[in-house]
Length: 349
Image (cartoon, rainbow, N blue to C red; front, side, top):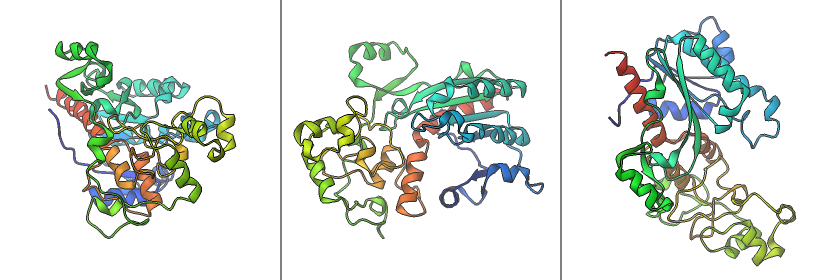
């Protein structure tokens, strides 16, 4: 059942570098620009499609956004549904942050989808359960006009958390709890990046993949001293404060709780935590290499997102970092696509 391919006929992104990356990998049918302006243009033709897949900007819902309650980006799902209507799609997939499923907008989304004739179901999926070496959690809403997606979604998990021990193993043996027969252990940081040599330089390299995006940064002497002060896997800002309080920023010392991933070192034998757009800044999260005194590289972040080395990124190194951090992990997307394929074939039965 795995690995069904789809032919893309139209795509859109506001970011020109994202559009360039899309075109390098998938073809020239991606349109650059504001989706509202594009849809309001009388010359715009949305081609017929079986399925529409999209992720309206999620910053409006994110807990990292202090102004999320009034953020206008929370309404960008509306033009997304206009694309669904104009394309005549029978299935849609909408991706966003987990907070969406607890928002007023989620109620509005489900109400509109129902009025358009869709049966819908929303779930929060952990990417690690589907072969991504990262415990990234994303909300996925699937709508279908001719079949109830709740009967086939979420997809069966292909990987399991080995730290849950014998209880989970027995569930697997009984083919229970939503696991695919033959499910294997979560993929780890070691699985994803251990074969890479130490990075060279600080810019995109004129090398074949994977070394092209395997470059370092230029840490200040203070940053390097902080890296070296927390050499063990799993250490974080609290360990830094205990060991070398003189190197610890005052704002971290004053923050007594939370932020346990800030200035955190990855574990070799666990998945990474969520890889965001500024993974090259350890002060933003758990982005320090498990062994080396540096943050992860663009290539390492791409692998932790499950991008194959052959995938081509375009733009500056900062822009590529944004593309990597904002992406839905391909391995997770593939499992959702398998459900979409199943729903589309239900229409033929």
